[in-house]
Image (cartoon, rainbow, N blue to C red; front, side):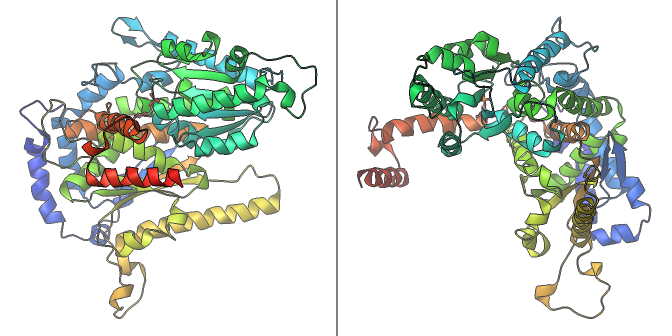
Length: 567
Ligand SMILES: O=P(O)(O)OC[C@H]1O[C@H](O)[C@H](O)[C@@H](O)[C@@H]1O
């Protein structure tokens, strides 16, 4: 990593890249292709069920060579080893970031500060497996004796987005021979998602998973308190329930909390304080960052949907990417190459918007997941040594299912004034398992349609008007300038293993960029002040603070709320 004196922009390769970019800025992407028929082979790599095509980046051989030199000068190889071996890479919190340890195979060894942690990781997976098996066998019963049918994950940020994304992506992998357990997610502090479930579900067969690394997050705890009151209110008056016998015994609040809540956290004390019984507590460690936590017990909703066997496949896929990241030379290393493409765009081509566009409906929440992974990790402006940076870091990253975004914001991608880099993501194979031949034929045709659109869009973004073999001038409003770079990631097939590799690819890409930008991707101090000020603001809204301390806008908003409450 760059030392306190050598910020990345002072490294020789950075200087070279700055000059190189001046020359390349005027070269259209279509000309890079025109001059080089071997571009696909040269800029495409395949690893762990993924094909990464970087040929549509606005770069050439020399660019890549300079970027690889930058990676060396910034200390990327050493940083990869430090990450994977459990060094304290999270400098502001003085701890390792060991999400990769959560996917090590059982026979691996990783000693961190004198302790082999692999055994503990696998013990926690085994404990999770036991809970999953009880629920899948219909043996977990609510306080009135009914088997659990609905599991609602109450969590936010890293305790929500990863499990939500993966359960949606892999819903096809649900085992067929289990007691049907449906998994749901409620994250928002305003309670609207939870209120919907409470209006529809039967408390007798509903279980809540309180997922919170810190177990202090107000969003999750406020949902948890509402859920607890709902359960206690409805179940202690068991006789009011439609199916209850008139002789039903009263049920204690303690039994209800015991049978209807599982806690997942790095703080067993706080789980116990809240009332989660120790048998129903799943643990993880401070050295797992929230947005990197889906691989362990925070992944309980995933295991409930896809079963433990598939969950272990997800881990194996991620581990395959970890091994590649550790062992592959930089110029063949997928996360390094993807990270360098990002550095090139942000720091040398001044492209600071990045769109994530999956062409598979199952990846609906992938962009939302990456928004946290990338922007909470690398949305920083201070180096690891605490100096303000004078170069750009994480771009604004957003996304949507590609086919739907075509009918929404692609207009801006093709004809707007902002340069945007896009990541297209699609599976090569789809629908082979559909039994009915007619339906399979139709769905396979739809898959081809989606791929055709995916490939067409990156081509048009690259070539602009030249994608059409059409002579003669076009009116200005119909012109496409092209020259917008993109990457394409193809999955052989969307499976637990390839999804694991895909997520790990992005996790490590984020790390590579953080190393080059000399920032800490594993903390998130930028979310703290808002929480603190929200507490003050709530006191004022509740009439317990001094409104006159506030600025005119905040005063006006609070007064508007008070007026609405009086109506
Ligand atoms: O899991 P928890 O401790 O409840 O945290 C949930 C989320 O909230 C925090 O404010 C952070 O911004 C996220 O990184 C974190 O994932």
